[in-house]
Amino acid sequence: DTPINRGLEERGWGRSFQLVDPTWSPSGRYLAALANMDTGPYLYVPVVFTPAGEPVAFGRPSTEFPEPFAWSPVEDVLAYTQGEAPYRVTEVYLLDPATGMDRRMVTSGGEEYPHVTDLAWSPSGRWVALTLWWAPEGYPRQALRIVDPVASEQVAELDIDTGGITAPLVDWRP
Image (cartoon, helix red, strand yellow):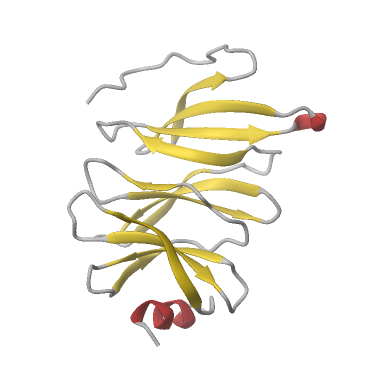
């Protein structure tokens, strides 16, 4: 009967049996981890909590394993993924535990959309890079997409199959 499990149950999401991949926020005020669920309608929920184990914020639950999540290197804002089984991790959200803001940064928009397999913040916190995978007509493809987290806009994409950049890369320095 932990505070995290009480928070998950209050939302109707079930109970967690473990927290995986804990990572500290830049300020050290928070930890984020992925709650693996053993009851309820969902399998995974990103959770932000204090070092004392008190939950501060919950991300959106998933039925598919949403591997990628990472703190901005310059502020306590967590980027995390969400999706549905099988293999449709198609949305990226930003979660700010201090303000409670949880907003979608990237979505499929209803189109066939790649599986987000990884994400990384730029050292300055200005950009988020997403590694995408999809298989249109059975042909596997990969791309690296650079997104502005403030405007939620793509600024560049590198198609790994062709090597072509479809928009100019901007700054990636601190």
